[in-house]
Image 1 (cartoon, rainbow, N blue to C red):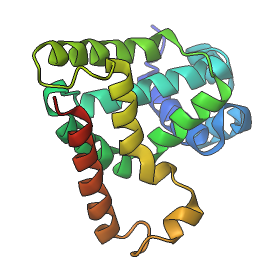
Image 2: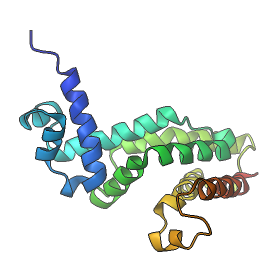
Image 3: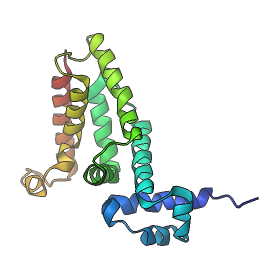
Image 4: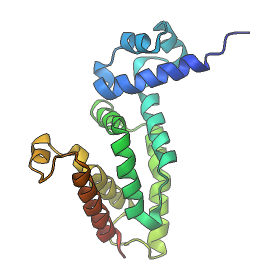
Length: 190
């Protein structure tokens, strides 16, 4: 019976998550992932395929973890946006990974499309029920909600430096979160 590779895979996925978040697909090094996971780099190829396939898997798992931790609620988009904002503050690597994926893998994977599809369907259902405005297409609503939610993290450091409080101070984050959820509420009101 071959040895159980569960712990090895877990260490590799954790190491790859940080490596890909820090360096993207092109800048990440398989040697560093293997060293961080304390395994032979050959095991990366055995368990996960080539570096590109491994990157896609890490991004997909990151998005799946996010979806599990922050369930989508079409009938409470401000609540969803606030919970997503909080999650992304605690897990900034998710935004870095998705940023790298957009830069280096501009064609969406089936997993990425499948992650958005139920959200779009839920928004369409909420529009039919009159819970969410029907004047904007569901995909556009979701794009705007996600854009508002990630705006502070994606803002230029120069712009963040002009904020009245320190850019990542608790006071600034509370104010930004409140403004963001109010904007989502205004965007989605029917």
